[in-house]
Image (tube, one colour):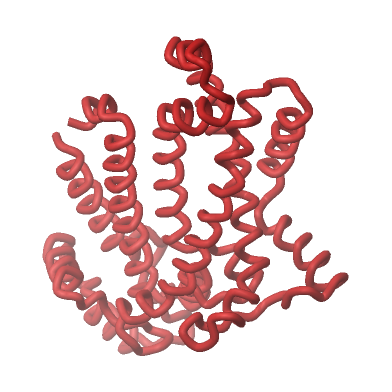
Length: 311
């Protein structure tokens, strides 16, 4: 089966499970969603509105048909269309994710390449020890430390708050510094370990030795000969991380009060907003599948030999 066929099958399975979310809860879904204070008439109305009184096939076809046509349901808490709620939160999350990935890769690539070229030396020991420490620390702890140092002690940046980029670009970027650094530090540690290992393997290959024999400098060797064969694993990892982060960076968004998909997810769970929860799960699945395909395409462009495994 092709990658597109497998991806479509994954989405169908996830959509089916998402449609069944209410029945994964123990007890009566309507009673759980409305609470003990609800009346029998209210619970019956909710079952009818959500199709909970229908068989699975009828309910799934109706729900999936609405999803395809853009009707993802209506949020309980805001009384607005679910798709509108989700798309309204995408810009903040996308900005946070994109900026953090750019910074993480800008730091990762040169450090990992030069660390791999000089194993055991001071830079390599610092990189190895630093990445091990950062990987062991949860991202929200890193965020709290950054807030304490740069917001509380030094007063350089605000501890929380968000201004849309279209409203005030400079204030937006100023307020995004700490949350972007929080996410970038966590991502760069994983990227460093991955790219360093791939680069060290590439440096032991015959073509790297041949480049040195032909008089290539360290910069030419690392940036022209080593980066490309070492890049596929990192590219695939970036694709996965971007997709997962776009699904909602819950901790970072909550810590810095960024109105993105992560905070929307927490609000939906807290409000037992089933249509919104279903929409968020499906949206995250679509993003992960799409970015997985894009990552595969990028890896195949970098290393065409890898396409044999995706046929």
